[in-house]
Image 1 (cartoon, helix red, strand yellow):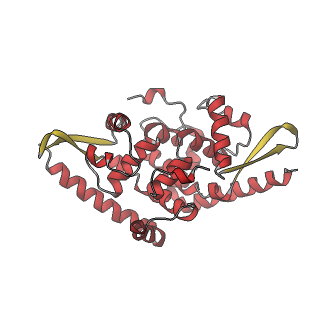
Image 2: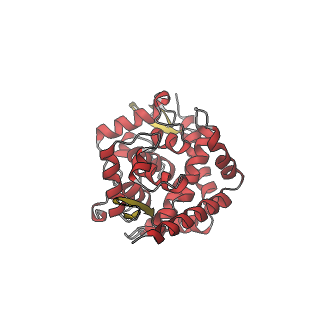
Length: 147
Length: 147
């Protein structure tokens, strides 16, 4: 953990140094909103993360306590990744990103995302609770498989 | 503008690709919360941004419509940077970062930031309005100087 080498004691900088890089945020997005859980799942995302970046970011996220991993009981050569409570607490931050993009993006928002967008716009606290409940349920279900 | 080369049509990726890198976020933080406005102001921040990174990020932020710049009337060799409305709309996102760090940071929050933290925790919407009013007033005052 490189907490001792933070560039400042600003709370905003704290988050940005720990998890604020783009690829880490996309991995967390995949786990929060698309319920992805494996290396293969993350590789399949539209942004086409490079394998070395994915391996690096997963190791860093694990080292910093944002994700936990355990062996996939269905395939012992693979890992399943789950979010920690600290990371689940990032849901409101991601919802603010979604709302900002909904307002300012100059590219069209795809159909399949409009449902979530509407919910976020209508009542962001309610949408945050809904996502939270979904993620907590999935994380608990995955953790049960842990051997 | 490189909007045509976005890696996906995800609204979260949209923001992350446009302004989600750590140094861009710190420059925006400086303008939103510390009312910084010049190259020298940004260089003086605790995180000690490198001059080439600062120059690069300011040019990119300007190109993408996050900041505007104009010549400093007091010193024609220098520029003053102001935020656009789109960037001012990032205030709620930054407040969520602050609240997350307040809850999860393993380093102490410095005294001088506790006032804002308390306000954010007590009523984040009210704190967002307060920061918004401050930033809009400063941006308008700076824009008046524009020659």
